[in-house]
Length: 432
Ligand SMILES: Nc1nc2c(c(=O)[nH]1)N[C@H]1C(S)=C(S)[C@@H](COP(=O)(O)O)O[C@H]1N2
Ligand SMILES: [Mo]
View (cartoon, rainbow, N blue to C red):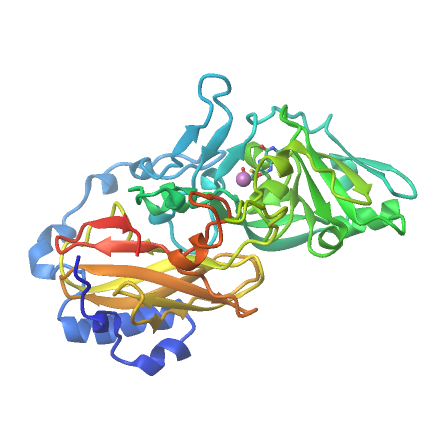
């Protein structure tokens, strides 16, 4: 496949791109300069749509009544989490569902579309009977029910959660064809509200030689992970609310551990126990999995912080460009190390790059939306995005990432995704 002229990612005012932080500015520039160059944008001319002025059927009858809890329009029924069970015959509730990034905008994942990863299904927890125990190397063990926890001061923070297995399909020998959500949908962002874990640990009183905690869930997998005490005392949270409402059953109702920027598995759902310890417990969930195998035969014991990453959500697999001309290319970027500082976009497989506009607010360990006007010349192109975070970490190429591990290592994958645009406007996943 031949690559197209790199200048097709160019925007009329190069300076404007870096200087304009907001979507509005990006959109305006796109509309004014894009439209003036390209003639018309997407709107049909008024003459062609005279029917717009006739009375549509929904204006002739009273509308539907109020509802206790709203749902999306029936016309959006196709926007769903694709899901699969890894062990369908023995445990159909063990598996994952994925956020359909290709259909979403902004940075907050709607609660009904937050990805799911369950090791033995969603437990049916009665919140009145659920308890959280803090014990181990503490001065006084404490037990909290939901009512007691709700009396503590709370904070709200917007953070992504990403499974260590996200983008694992890109570790296969040949590119798997799938939507942005099917390939990279084990990552979602919510505004989480809860109690800083440090507050609860301090109340229990931590012994001087304590270094780690063990966190355990109340599901029938009793999933548990070891977490360094330094993280527990830093920005860890016992989350009770997700985007304003109680945490969904799929996300850990009535409470989950939130470890901003660290691999999804450690964010223990249905949290029931925290044991303060002097070392990692080496549970089944942190030894058989998530330990990345290197070419020398040694595995990395732990990879907690997730790498800097980005994903073009439009255009991506499943979309079709129906004509040449101006499009707003957009996507999300995130890093376990902090804020996103830059996202660059290439249309020629990584030879030439243009800086995209970042939409504020740019939050730490959260999705950041990027946008770039793109004039598609109707030829084949290789679209890529490359994120940089505030610590200077740069998203690696496929080659740089895979060379660190044995072939097929499918955890913690954050290499640059390539979408190939064919001359007919169809889009596929390719390795570049
Ligand atoms: N108790 C418990 N906690 C759990 C899991 C689980 O199966 N049981 N899955 C883990 C994994 S592997 C991930 S990636 C995240 C997924 O969180 P989500 O389902 O809310 O997206 O939860 C983690 N916490
Ligand atoms: Mo996970």
